[in-house]
Image 1: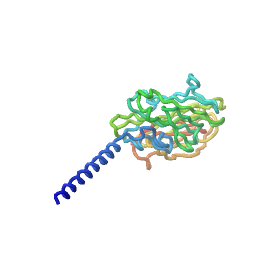
Image 2 (image 1 turned 90 degrees about the vertical axis):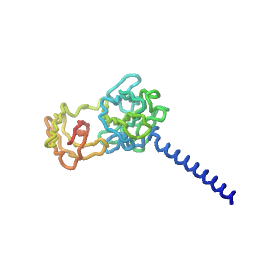
Image 3 (image 1 turned 135 degrees about the horizontal axis):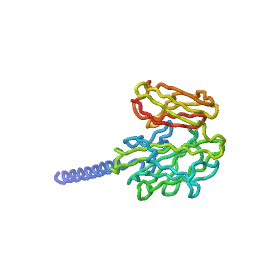
Image 4 (image 1 turned 135 degrees about the vertical axis):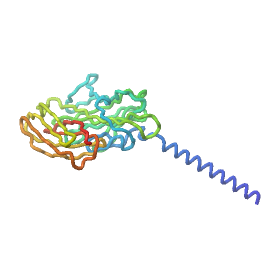
Length: 285
């Protein structure tokens, strides 16, 4: 009986030690940063998509000054693309945070993938099916390993028109968890070279009255066509406010009521005029 009692104590100690190690290992694993090697597809902040807050709890901010995207033809920055030509896309975060990440895609005016992406070994990876997404890698998520991210973009065929690069970047706080990070969203429009009328309008203005929640869009169009208005929140959820309203040559004015069914928060009001997107940030209180 004495030996049986000692064996029982030994077995209990072994089981307890094993369980403790398994629990601690699982606990450590749960605290490891999410998506250190790149995010799942559809986290770029493009219309109808999520952004980094799908996995990281943190603040969503305007990234126009934080996300610096440059299109390079060789070593030369360009603002227009030639259909079918391959360019280098360079993306930097102006604050150059110690721990960071990103995802980006390139879409035409109909939110269809424009061109193709090719990653750079160790610096960027590409995922997605119909739409392709450039991401950071496990080797390029710090300012030491990647002061900038770079990947190749082969421009789409002629007649595609303006292409918008959507970027969601993550300024991580380095606490080893998925909370407290800063997420920056931005859009970068690249026009097609020699596409005829490169500008759809000669002027675009938006006035938003907070008290009445009325948004008034005024613009002067250079051609007949149509306009659609979309409201996009910081999580990428899109509401179709107006679709295919007629555009005339000359002065146009459209007023929309945003007082119904829209939660409080920061939004991007997207006006697609004759296939060309124009955006303004607004706050609904």
